[in-house]
Length: 293
Ligand SMILES: [Zn+2]
Image 1: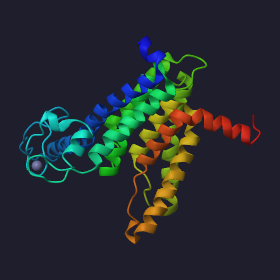
Image 2: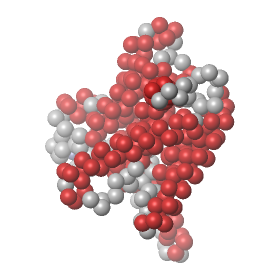
Image 3: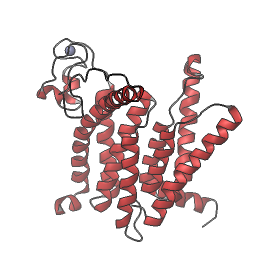
């Protein structure tokens, strides 16, 4: 452990490698969690309507069954399950049937690895870094699922908020988040939810449309719990700025892009991650620039 404290580059490299493995697991979460939830909802709906539940089918969770090729059902062998490298070695194709494997699998692994290395670099070896890595992993999973399904599952956003609130009990004065100070975290969680809920209601009143989902409010609440309420305006500004740029680019690229709902979750998650690393610097720079401090 002293080794990591003495050699930040080594620590970042190890964090990157751990990130590859975690990214591989997050691929499973992104792919399977919505399927598991759908199954659960279908069973519940059948119960409410008094219909016999559909056949249970084979068990499905984050561990079972082992990963298979969606095209040929061949089980993926351990040697072909090495993050990124296997995909490159197989040239992006299934070893059994040569069906293409989407590039997003190695991309999620690579993005997680880079994000983990950046977090390790930024925080250095210490109590904050583990929390920051947990936060990062949740944000990657939520981004993937929201892009795929326009869904931010409660089973991810709620624990994320609780962990942020709980961690704030161990905040040390003078240290930057995470964990945020207890008071900042509690206000952050409430303010995050209420603010986006109000925007949603006003938008609905004005346009008759629903611009966001309740998952967005819960994610913003979780972000408030992790970073403290002070970071929420910055996160919102960053999310809106990135969202506007991507949105305009998408509409410009294809006229079909107009009217297609663009999930807000990925922008919130990306903005939260930027604020996790550079939020305090950005805010301090802004205050100095405007002469407020
Ligand atoms: Zn196959």
